[in-house]
Image (cartoon, rainbow over all chains, first blue to last red; front, side):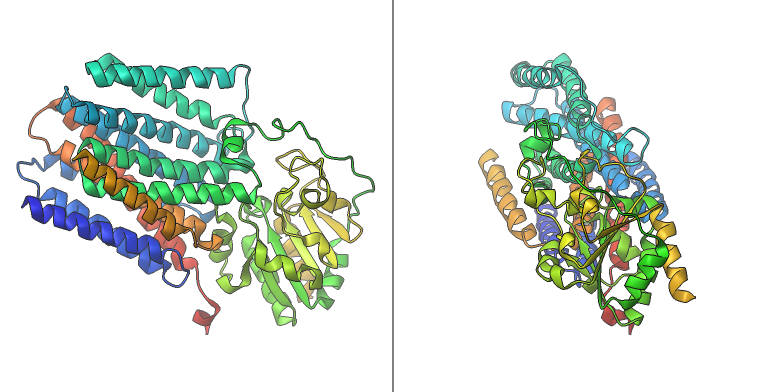
Length: 452
Length: 94
Protein backbone atom coordinates (compact mmCIF):
# COMPACT_ATOMS: atom_id res chain seq x y z
CA UNK A 1 0.00 0.00 0.00
CA UNK A 2 2.82 2.33 0.94
CA UNK A 3 4.37 2.09 -2.49
CA UNK A 4 1.02 2.51 -4.21
CA UNK A 5 0.51 5.77 -2.34
CA UNK A 6 3.97 6.97 -3.33
CA UNK A 7 3.30 6.03 -6.92
CA UNK A 8 0.10 8.09 -6.83
CA UNK A 9 2.13 11.03 -5.49
CA UNK A 10 4.42 10.80 -8.49
CA UNK A 11 1.43 10.85 -10.83
CA UNK A 12 0.05 13.87 -8.96
CA UNK A 13 3.39 15.69 -9.27
CA UNK A 14 3.51 15.02 -13.00
CA UNK A 15 -0.02 16.38 -13.39
CA UNK A 16 0.93 19.53 -11.46
CA UNK A 17 3.92 20.09 -13.70
CA UNK A 18 1.84 19.56 -16.84
CA UNK A 19 -0.90 21.75 -15.46
CA UNK A 20 1.46 24.65 -14.78
CA UNK A 21 3.02 24.23 -18.21
CA UNK A 22 -0.38 24.41 -19.89
CA UNK A 23 -1.35 27.45 -17.82
CA UNK A 24 1.35 29.24 -19.81
CA UNK A 25 -0.65 29.48 -23.00
CA UNK A 26 -4.08 31.04 -23.43
CA UNK A 27 -5.49 28.23 -25.54
CA UNK A 28 -4.56 25.44 -23.11
CA UNK A 29 -4.77 27.28 -19.80
CA UNK A 30 -8.20 26.03 -18.78
CA UNK A 31 -7.33 22.41 -19.47
CA UNK A 32 -4.09 22.93 -17.59
CA UNK A 33 -5.94 24.10 -14.51
CA UNK A 34 -8.25 21.09 -14.71
CA UNK A 35 -5.30 18.72 -15.07
CA UNK A 36 -3.65 20.22 -12.02
CA UNK A 37 -6.89 19.85 -10.04
CA UNK A 38 -6.99 16.20 -11.08
CA UNK A 39 -3.49 15.87 -9.67
CA UNK A 40 -4.73 17.34 -6.39
CA UNK A 41 -7.64 14.87 -6.31
CA UNK A 42 -5.27 11.94 -6.85
CA UNK A 43 -3.00 13.16 -4.07
CA UNK A 44 -5.95 13.49 -1.68
CA UNK A 45 -7.36 10.05 -2.54
CA UNK A 46 -3.90 8.52 -2.15
CA UNK A 47 -3.34 9.92 1.32
CA UNK A 48 -6.75 8.65 2.39
CA UNK A 49 -5.48 5.12 1.71
CA UNK A 50 -2.95 5.46 4.53
CA UNK A 51 -3.21 2.67 7.10
CA UNK A 52 -4.69 3.22 10.57
CA UNK A 53 -6.60 6.37 9.95
CA UNK A 54 -9.78 7.67 11.50
CA UNK A 55 -11.95 9.32 8.87
CA UNK A 56 -14.52 11.15 10.98
CA UNK A 57 -12.65 14.43 11.32
CA UNK A 58 -11.20 14.24 7.85
CA UNK A 59 -14.67 14.16 6.34
CA UNK A 60 -15.82 17.05 8.55
CA UNK A 61 -12.81 19.18 7.61
CA UNK A 62 -13.04 18.44 3.90
CA UNK A 63 -16.76 19.15 3.79
CA UNK A 64 -16.58 22.49 5.63
CA UNK A 65 -13.60 23.66 3.59
CA UNK A 66 -15.10 22.62 0.27
CA UNK A 67 -18.39 24.40 0.95
CA UNK A 68 -16.73 27.65 2.03
CA UNK A 69 -14.25 27.55 -0.86
CA UNK A 70 -16.92 26.85 -3.46
CA UNK A 71 -19.21 29.62 -2.23
CA UNK A 72 -16.38 32.16 -2.15
CA UNK A 73 -15.26 31.19 -5.64
CA UNK A 74 -18.77 31.45 -7.08
CA UNK A 75 -19.70 34.71 -5.41
CA UNK A 76 -16.64 36.82 -6.04
CA UNK A 77 -16.82 39.63 -8.57
CA UNK A 78 -13.99 39.85 -11.04
CA UNK A 79 -13.01 43.23 -9.62
CA UNK A 80 -12.67 41.54 -6.23
CA UNK A 81 -10.23 38.98 -7.56
CA UNK A 82 -7.01 40.44 -6.12
CA UNK A 83 -8.29 40.34 -2.56
CA UNK A 84 -9.73 36.84 -2.91
CA UNK A 85 -6.46 35.49 -4.27
CA UNK A 86 -4.70 37.16 -1.35
CA UNK A 87 -7.11 35.60 1.13
CA UNK A 88 -6.80 32.07 -0.31
CA UNK A 89 -3.07 32.51 -0.25
CA UNK A 90 -3.17 33.37 3.43
CA UNK A 91 -5.29 30.32 4.24
CA UNK A 92 -2.76 28.07 2.51
CA UNK A 93 0.03 29.64 4.55
CA UNK A 94 -1.82 29.22 7.85
CA UNK A 95 -2.64 25.61 6.95
CA UNK A 96 1.08 24.86 6.48
CA UNK A 97 1.88 26.52 9.79
CA UNK A 98 -0.74 24.36 11.52
CA UNK A 99 0.52 21.18 9.84
CA UNK A 100 3.97 21.91 11.24
CA UNK A 101 2.52 22.59 14.68
CA UNK A 102 0.28 19.49 14.61
CA UNK A 103 3.28 17.33 13.84
CA UNK A 104 5.01 18.76 16.89
CA UNK A 105 1.93 18.02 19.00
CA UNK A 106 2.06 14.41 17.80
CA UNK A 107 5.85 14.00 18.04
CA UNK A 108 7.10 16.44 20.69
CA UNK A 109 10.76 15.47 20.30
CA UNK A 110 11.54 15.78 16.62
CA UNK A 111 15.03 15.11 15.26
CA UNK A 112 17.02 18.25 14.45
CA UNK A 113 16.21 18.26 10.74
CA UNK A 114 12.48 17.86 11.32
CA UNK A 115 12.61 20.52 14.00
CA UNK A 116 14.31 22.95 11.62
CA UNK A 117 11.67 22.21 8.98
CA UNK A 118 8.95 22.90 11.58
CA UNK A 119 10.52 26.26 12.31
CA UNK A 120 10.54 27.08 8.59
CA UNK A 121 6.96 25.91 8.01
CA UNK A 122 5.80 28.04 10.95
CA UNK A 123 7.87 31.07 9.99
CA UNK A 124 7.00 31.13 6.28
CA UNK A 125 3.41 30.01 6.85
CA UNK A 126 2.90 32.65 9.54
CA UNK A 127 4.31 35.48 7.43
CA UNK A 128 2.21 34.33 4.50
CA UNK A 129 -0.95 34.29 6.61
CA UNK A 130 -0.82 37.71 8.25
CA UNK A 131 0.92 39.29 5.26
CA UNK A 132 -1.87 38.10 2.98
CA UNK A 133 -4.47 39.23 5.48
CA UNK A 134 -3.07 42.77 5.45
CA UNK A 135 -2.89 42.65 1.65
CA UNK A 136 -6.52 41.53 1.64
CA UNK A 137 -7.56 44.40 3.92
CA UNK A 138 -5.68 46.92 1.80
CA UNK A 139 -6.99 45.61 -1.52
CA UNK A 140 -10.60 45.41 -0.38
CA UNK A 141 -10.43 48.95 0.97
CA UNK A 142 -11.17 47.83 4.53
CA UNK A 143 -7.86 49.43 5.43
CA UNK A 144 -6.20 52.44 3.85
CA UNK A 145 -4.08 51.46 0.87
CA UNK A 146 -1.28 53.86 1.72
CA UNK A 147 2.05 52.82 3.09
CA UNK A 148 2.15 52.92 6.88
CA UNK A 149 5.53 53.93 8.17
CA UNK A 150 6.76 54.64 11.65
CA UNK A 151 10.13 55.41 13.14
CA UNK A 152 12.38 52.47 13.88
CA UNK A 153 10.34 50.17 11.66
CA UNK A 154 13.35 48.59 10.02
CA UNK A 155 15.18 48.23 13.32
CA UNK A 156 12.13 46.54 14.83
CA UNK A 157 11.85 44.13 11.90
CA UNK A 158 15.53 43.29 12.13
CA UNK A 159 15.17 42.70 15.87
CA UNK A 160 12.24 40.35 15.31
CA UNK A 161 14.16 38.50 12.61
CA UNK A 162 17.09 38.02 15.01
CA UNK A 163 14.75 36.83 17.76
CA UNK A 164 13.22 34.32 15.34
CA UNK A 165 16.64 32.92 14.46
CA UNK A 166 17.55 32.61 18.14
CA UNK A 167 14.22 31.01 19.04
CA UNK A 168 14.55 28.64 16.11
CA UNK A 169 17.90 27.52 17.42
CA UNK A 170 16.51 27.04 20.93
CA UNK A 171 13.58 25.05 19.60
CA UNK A 172 15.64 22.75 17.40
CA UNK A 173 18.04 21.90 20.23
CA UNK A 174 15.63 21.80 23.19
CA UNK A 175 12.16 21.14 21.68
CA UNK A 176 10.77 23.61 24.20
CA UNK A 177 7.14 24.35 23.48
CA UNK A 178 7.42 27.97 24.68
CA UNK A 179 9.97 28.58 21.94
CA UNK A 180 7.53 27.21 19.40
CA UNK A 181 4.68 29.43 20.62
CA UNK A 182 6.95 32.47 20.62
CA UNK A 183 7.99 31.60 17.07
CA UNK A 184 4.38 31.41 15.97
CA UNK A 185 3.61 34.78 17.53
CA UNK A 186 6.64 36.54 16.08
CA UNK A 187 6.12 35.08 12.61
CA UNK A 188 2.55 36.34 12.56
CA UNK A 189 3.73 39.76 13.76
CA UNK A 190 6.46 39.89 11.12
CA UNK A 191 3.92 39.25 8.37
CA UNK A 192 1.92 42.29 9.48
CA UNK A 193 4.97 44.52 9.83
CA UNK A 194 6.37 43.45 6.47
CA UNK A 195 3.27 44.39 4.46
CA UNK A 196 1.91 47.54 6.16
CA UNK A 197 4.71 49.80 4.83
CA UNK A 198 3.99 48.78 1.23
CA UNK A 199 1.65 50.99 -0.76
CA UNK A 200 -1.22 50.01 -3.04
CA UNK A 201 0.67 50.41 -6.30
CA UNK A 202 3.27 47.88 -5.22
CA UNK A 203 0.62 45.26 -4.44
CA UNK A 204 1.25 43.20 -7.61
CA UNK A 205 4.75 42.45 -6.32
CA UNK A 206 3.54 41.73 -2.79
CA UNK A 207 0.86 39.31 -3.95
CA UNK A 208 3.32 37.48 -6.18
CA UNK A 209 5.79 37.16 -3.31
CA UNK A 210 3.14 35.93 -0.89
CA UNK A 211 2.08 33.43 -3.53
CA UNK A 212 5.65 32.22 -3.67
CA UNK A 213 5.77 32.02 0.13
CA UNK A 214 2.61 29.95 0.38
CA UNK A 215 4.32 27.40 -1.85
CA UNK A 216 7.53 27.44 0.16
CA UNK A 217 5.53 27.01 3.38
CA UNK A 218 3.89 23.90 1.91
CA UNK A 219 7.31 22.67 0.86
CA UNK A 220 8.64 23.17 4.40
CA UNK A 221 5.63 21.29 5.77
CA UNK A 222 6.61 18.54 3.32
CA UNK A 223 10.04 18.33 4.94
CA UNK A 224 8.35 18.08 8.34
CA UNK A 225 6.23 15.08 7.42
CA UNK A 226 8.75 13.76 4.87
CA UNK A 227 6.31 13.81 2.02
CA UNK A 228 7.51 14.17 -1.58
CA UNK A 229 4.39 15.57 -3.17
CA UNK A 230 4.29 18.49 -0.73
CA UNK A 231 7.91 19.27 -1.42
CA UNK A 232 7.56 19.13 -5.19
CA UNK A 233 4.26 20.98 -5.52
CA UNK A 234 5.23 23.58 -2.93
CA UNK A 235 8.55 24.25 -4.57
CA UNK A 236 6.97 24.59 -8.01
CA UNK A 237 4.69 27.27 -6.64
CA UNK A 238 7.57 28.89 -4.76
CA UNK A 239 9.61 29.14 -7.95
CA UNK A 240 6.75 30.38 -10.10
CA UNK A 241 5.77 33.03 -7.56
CA UNK A 242 9.34 34.22 -7.36
CA UNK A 243 9.58 34.56 -11.13
CA UNK A 244 6.34 36.50 -11.20
CA UNK A 245 7.62 38.88 -8.52
CA UNK A 246 10.82 39.44 -10.45
CA UNK A 247 8.85 40.15 -13.64
CA UNK A 248 6.71 42.64 -11.70
CA UNK A 249 9.78 44.34 -10.25
CA UNK A 250 11.42 44.65 -13.65
CA UNK A 251 8.23 46.24 -14.94
CA UNK A 252 8.65 48.89 -12.27
CA UNK A 253 12.40 49.19 -12.71
CA UNK A 254 12.94 48.34 -9.07
CA UNK A 255 14.56 45.52 -7.18
CA UNK A 256 12.76 43.16 -4.84
CA UNK A 257 14.68 44.58 -1.91
CA UNK A 258 13.65 48.09 -2.84
CA UNK A 259 9.95 47.21 -2.96
CA UNK A 260 10.07 45.29 0.30
CA UNK A 261 12.32 47.48 2.38
CA UNK A 262 12.36 50.94 0.86
CA UNK A 263 9.30 53.12 0.74
CA UNK A 264 8.70 54.62 -2.66
CA UNK A 265 11.00 57.47 -3.57
CA UNK A 266 12.63 57.47 -0.16
CA UNK A 267 15.61 55.50 -1.38
CA UNK A 268 16.69 58.04 -3.96
CA UNK A 269 15.34 61.27 -2.54
CA UNK A 270 14.47 62.25 -6.09
CA UNK A 271 11.38 64.23 -6.75
CA UNK A 272 11.52 64.99 -10.46
CA UNK A 273 11.47 68.31 -12.26
CA UNK A 274 8.66 70.76 -11.92
CA UNK A 275 6.35 70.73 -14.90
CA UNK A 276 5.47 73.76 -16.95
CA UNK A 277 2.34 74.27 -18.94
CA UNK A 278 -1.21 73.38 -18.11
CA UNK A 279 -3.56 70.48 -18.45
CA UNK A 280 -6.09 71.03 -21.21
CA UNK A 281 -9.56 69.73 -20.55
CA UNK A 282 -11.76 68.49 -23.35
CA UNK A 283 -15.43 67.62 -23.53
CA UNK A 284 -16.94 64.30 -24.51
CA UNK A 285 -18.19 65.87 -27.76
CA UNK A 286 -14.67 66.96 -28.75
CA UNK A 287 -13.40 63.46 -28.10
CA UNK A 288 -16.23 62.00 -30.13
CA UNK A 289 -15.32 63.95 -33.27
CA UNK A 290 -11.68 62.90 -33.05
CA UNK A 291 -12.54 59.26 -32.36
CA UNK A 292 -15.05 59.20 -35.19
CA UNK A 293 -12.26 59.99 -37.65
CA UNK A 294 -9.62 57.78 -36.03
CA UNK A 295 -8.15 54.87 -37.97
CA UNK A 296 -6.37 53.30 -35.02
CA UNK A 297 -7.20 53.51 -31.34
CA UNK A 298 -5.28 52.13 -28.38
CA UNK A 299 -6.83 51.84 -24.94
CA UNK A 300 -4.50 51.91 -21.96
CA UNK A 301 -6.36 50.76 -18.86
CA UNK A 302 -5.14 51.13 -15.29
CA UNK A 303 -6.39 50.65 -11.78
CA UNK A 304 -8.85 53.51 -12.30
CA UNK A 305 -10.78 51.37 -14.77
CA UNK A 306 -11.19 48.69 -12.11
CA UNK A 307 -12.32 51.22 -9.51
CA UNK A 308 -14.89 52.72 -11.87
CA UNK A 309 -15.97 49.23 -13.03
CA UNK A 310 -15.75 50.65 -16.53
CA UNK A 311 -14.61 47.51 -18.37
CA UNK A 312 -18.00 46.70 -19.94
CA UNK A 313 -18.53 50.25 -21.17
CA UNK A 314 -14.99 50.24 -22.56
CA UNK A 315 -15.65 47.04 -24.45
CA UNK A 316 -18.81 48.55 -25.92
CA UNK A 317 -16.91 51.62 -27.10
CA UNK A 318 -14.17 49.42 -28.57
CA UNK A 319 -16.78 47.47 -30.48
CA UNK A 320 -18.35 50.63 -31.88
CA UNK A 321 -14.95 51.96 -32.95
CA UNK A 322 -14.17 48.68 -34.70
CA UNK A 323 -17.49 48.71 -36.49
CA UNK A 324 -16.62 52.25 -37.49
CA UNK A 325 -13.54 50.91 -39.25
CA UNK A 326 -10.84 51.66 -36.71
CA UNK A 327 -8.22 49.24 -35.54
CA UNK A 328 -8.56 48.79 -31.79
CA UNK A 329 -5.99 47.47 -29.34
CA UNK A 330 -5.67 47.35 -25.58
CA UNK A 331 -2.16 48.04 -24.36
CA UNK A 332 -1.56 46.52 -20.97
CA UNK A 333 1.33 47.35 -18.72
CA UNK A 334 2.58 44.41 -16.62
CA UNK A 335 1.93 46.21 -13.34
CA UNK A 336 -1.31 47.98 -14.24
CA UNK A 337 -3.82 47.30 -11.50
CA UNK A 338 -3.35 45.65 -8.16
CA UNK A 339 -2.22 42.16 -9.10
CA UNK A 340 -0.27 40.65 -11.98
CA UNK A 341 -2.52 40.45 -15.02
CA UNK A 342 -5.37 42.32 -13.29
CA UNK A 343 -6.45 44.27 -16.40
CA UNK A 344 -6.51 41.16 -18.55
CA UNK A 345 -8.97 39.48 -16.23
CA UNK A 346 -11.29 42.48 -16.17
CA UNK A 347 -11.26 42.87 -19.95
CA UNK A 348 -11.76 39.15 -20.45
CA UNK A 349 -14.79 39.42 -18.19
CA UNK A 350 -16.11 42.14 -20.49
CA UNK A 351 -15.69 39.75 -23.42
CA UNK A 352 -12.69 41.38 -25.06
CA UNK A 353 -10.96 38.65 -27.11
CA UNK A 354 -7.39 38.08 -26.03
CA UNK A 355 -5.93 38.89 -29.45
CA UNK A 356 -6.85 42.51 -28.78
CA UNK A 357 -4.85 42.60 -25.55
CA UNK A 358 -1.33 43.68 -26.44
CA UNK A 359 1.70 43.66 -24.20
CA UNK A 360 3.73 46.80 -23.68
CA UNK A 361 6.68 45.67 -25.79
CA UNK A 362 4.47 44.86 -28.76
CA UNK A 363 2.55 48.08 -28.76
CA UNK A 364 5.34 50.60 -28.15
CA UNK A 365 6.96 50.26 -31.62
CA UNK A 366 3.67 51.11 -33.35
CA UNK A 367 2.63 53.86 -30.94
CA UNK A 368 3.72 56.69 -33.23
CA UNK A 369 1.30 55.46 -35.90
CA UNK A 370 -1.66 55.44 -33.54
CA UNK A 371 -4.30 58.13 -34.03
CA UNK A 372 -5.81 58.14 -30.59
CA UNK A 373 -4.64 56.68 -27.31
CA UNK A 374 -7.22 56.57 -24.52
CA UNK A 375 -5.73 56.32 -21.06
CA UNK A 376 -8.30 55.05 -18.58
CA UNK A 377 -7.28 55.58 -14.98
CA UNK A 378 -3.64 54.69 -15.59
CA UNK A 379 -0.98 57.07 -14.40
CA UNK A 380 2.62 56.16 -13.65
CA UNK A 381 2.73 53.47 -16.33
CA UNK A 382 2.27 56.15 -19.01
CA UNK A 383 4.35 58.92 -17.43
CA UNK A 384 6.95 60.13 -19.96
CA UNK A 385 9.14 61.30 -17.08
CA UNK A 386 10.26 57.68 -16.83
CA UNK A 387 11.95 58.16 -20.20
CA UNK A 388 12.82 61.84 -20.26
CA UNK A 389 13.52 63.08 -16.77
CA UNK A 390 16.60 61.62 -15.14
CA UNK A 391 15.78 63.27 -11.85
CA UNK A 392 12.41 61.52 -11.61
CA UNK A 393 12.14 58.65 -9.11
CA UNK A 394 10.51 56.50 -11.77
CA UNK A 395 13.23 57.23 -14.34
CA UNK A 396 14.08 54.01 -16.17
CA UNK A 397 10.78 52.29 -15.53
CA UNK A 398 9.44 50.85 -18.78
CA UNK A 399 6.24 52.63 -19.80
CA UNK A 400 3.66 52.52 -22.53
CA UNK A 401 4.66 55.39 -24.76
CA UNK A 402 1.23 56.87 -25.33
CA UNK A 403 2.75 60.35 -25.67
CA UNK A 404 3.92 59.29 -29.13
CA UNK A 405 0.35 58.86 -30.33
CA UNK A 406 -1.16 61.70 -32.36
CA UNK A 407 -3.80 62.47 -29.78
CA UNK A 408 -4.08 61.28 -26.20
CA UNK A 409 -7.24 61.36 -24.15
CA UNK A 410 -6.62 60.83 -20.47
CA UNK A 411 -9.62 59.85 -18.36
CA UNK A 412 -9.10 60.91 -14.81
CA UNK A 413 -11.25 61.53 -11.80
CA UNK A 414 -9.54 64.72 -10.73
CA UNK A 415 -6.31 66.63 -11.02
CA UNK A 416 -4.46 64.74 -8.27
CA UNK A 417 -1.27 62.75 -8.70
CA UNK A 418 -0.97 58.94 -8.87
CA UNK A 419 -0.10 56.59 -6.02
CA UNK A 420 3.52 57.64 -6.23
CA UNK A 421 2.52 61.26 -5.74
CA UNK A 422 4.33 62.19 -8.94
CA UNK A 423 3.16 64.74 -11.43
CA UNK A 424 2.49 63.07 -14.75
CA UNK A 425 4.04 65.11 -17.55
CA UNK A 426 1.85 63.27 -20.05
CA UNK A 427 -1.14 65.26 -18.83
CA UNK A 428 0.63 68.51 -19.73
CA UNK A 429 1.59 67.31 -23.20
CA UNK A 430 0.81 69.30 -26.33
CA UNK A 431 -1.30 66.47 -27.78
CA UNK A 432 -3.01 65.45 -24.55
CA UNK A 433 -6.56 66.32 -23.60
CA UNK A 434 -8.03 65.54 -20.22
CA UNK A 435 -11.48 64.04 -19.82
CA UNK A 436 -12.32 64.61 -16.18
CA UNK A 437 -14.95 62.64 -14.35
CA UNK A 438 -15.88 59.08 -13.57
CA UNK A 439 -14.34 56.83 -16.24
CA UNK A 440 -17.48 54.78 -16.67
CA UNK A 441 -19.68 57.84 -17.18
CA UNK A 442 -17.24 59.37 -19.66
CA UNK A 443 -17.06 56.20 -21.74
CA UNK A 444 -20.81 55.70 -21.60
CA UNK A 445 -21.16 59.31 -22.76
CA UNK A 446 -18.93 58.61 -25.75
CA UNK A 447 -20.92 55.51 -26.61
CA UNK A 448 -24.11 57.57 -26.49
CA UNK A 449 -22.56 60.12 -28.88
CA UNK A 450 -21.78 57.40 -31.38
CA UNK A 451 -25.29 56.02 -31.16
CA UNK A 452 -26.95 59.37 -31.90
CA UNK B 1 16.54 10.67 3.43
CA UNK B 2 17.19 14.40 3.91
CA UNK B 3 19.58 14.48 0.96
CA UNK B 4 17.00 12.83 -1.25
CA UNK B 5 14.30 15.29 -0.20
CA UNK B 6 16.61 18.25 -0.75
CA UNK B 7 17.49 16.83 -4.15
CA UNK B 8 13.81 16.70 -5.06
CA UNK B 9 13.32 20.23 -3.75
CA UNK B 10 16.13 21.66 -5.86
CA UNK B 11 15.02 19.89 -9.03
CA UNK B 12 11.43 21.01 -8.56
CA UNK B 13 12.67 24.57 -8.09
CA UNK B 14 14.57 24.56 -11.36
CA UNK B 15 11.63 23.01 -13.13
CA UNK B 16 9.34 25.71 -11.76
CA UNK B 17 11.67 28.45 -13.01
CA UNK B 18 11.84 26.89 -16.47
CA UNK B 19 8.08 26.42 -16.73
CA UNK B 20 7.06 29.93 -15.78
CA UNK B 21 9.63 32.05 -17.51
CA UNK B 22 7.77 32.25 -20.80
CA UNK B 23 4.25 32.88 -19.56
CA UNK B 24 2.65 35.89 -21.29
CA UNK B 25 1.59 38.64 -18.91
CA UNK B 26 -2.08 38.31 -19.81
CA UNK B 27 -2.10 34.96 -18.01
CA UNK B 28 -0.40 36.15 -14.85
CA UNK B 29 -3.54 36.26 -12.75
CA UNK B 30 -4.82 32.77 -13.60
CA UNK B 31 -1.29 31.45 -13.25
CA UNK B 32 -1.08 32.95 -9.81
CA UNK B 33 -4.43 31.77 -8.59
CA UNK B 34 -3.91 28.37 -10.21
CA UNK B 35 -0.51 27.89 -8.60
CA UNK B 36 -2.00 29.21 -5.38
CA UNK B 37 -4.45 26.31 -5.50
CA UNK B 38 -1.51 23.94 -5.96
CA UNK B 39 0.11 25.35 -2.83
CA UNK B 40 -2.95 23.97 -1.06
CA UNK B 41 -1.16 20.61 -1.40
CA UNK B 42 -0.52 21.03 2.29
CA UNK B 43 -4.02 19.49 2.47
CA UNK B 44 -2.23 16.13 2.34
CA UNK B 45 -0.35 16.94 5.53
CA UNK B 46 -3.56 18.24 7.11
CA UNK B 47 -5.39 14.98 6.29
CA UNK B 48 -2.63 12.92 7.88
CA UNK B 49 -2.78 15.06 11.03
CA UNK B 50 -6.60 15.03 11.21
CA UNK B 51 -6.76 11.27 10.76
CA UNK B 52 -4.47 10.45 13.68
CA UNK B 53 -5.88 7.82 16.02
CA UNK B 54 -4.85 9.64 19.18
CA UNK B 55 -3.46 12.96 20.35
CA UNK B 56 -6.26 15.47 20.73
CA UNK B 57 -4.12 18.57 20.17
CA UNK B 58 -2.67 17.28 16.92
CA UNK B 59 -6.09 16.37 15.60
CA UNK B 60 -7.61 19.75 16.45
CA UNK B 61 -4.76 21.58 14.72
CA UNK B 62 -5.02 19.15 11.82
CA UNK B 63 -8.73 19.75 11.30
CA UNK B 64 -8.32 23.54 11.31
CA UNK B 65 -5.48 23.14 8.81
CA UNK B 66 -7.64 20.82 6.74
CA UNK B 67 -10.52 23.29 6.55
CA UNK B 68 -8.18 26.12 5.51
CA UNK B 69 -6.28 24.01 2.99
CA UNK B 70 -9.52 22.74 1.47
CA UNK B 71 -10.82 26.30 1.07
CA UNK B 72 -7.53 27.13 -0.64
CA UNK B 73 -7.71 24.12 -2.95
CA UNK B 74 -11.41 24.06 -3.88
CA UNK B 75 -11.80 27.84 -4.02
CA UNK B 76 -8.52 28.32 -5.85
CA UNK B 77 -9.25 25.84 -8.61
CA UNK B 78 -12.85 26.96 -9.05
CA UNK B 79 -12.06 30.64 -9.25
CA UNK B 80 -9.22 30.00 -11.70
CA UNK B 81 -11.53 27.96 -13.87
CA UNK B 82 -14.12 30.73 -13.77
CA UNK B 83 -11.53 33.25 -14.86
CA UNK B 84 -10.13 31.11 -17.65
CA UNK B 85 -13.60 30.37 -18.97
CA UNK B 86 -13.85 34.09 -19.73
CA UNK B 87 -10.64 34.23 -21.72
CA UNK B 88 -11.66 33.59 -25.22
CA UNK B 89 -10.36 34.05 -28.70
CA UNK B 90 -11.98 35.92 -31.55
CA UNK B 91 -12.30 32.67 -33.43
CA UNK B 92 -14.63 31.29 -30.77
CA UNK B 93 -17.17 33.99 -31.49
CA UNK B 94 -17.79 33.02 -35.03
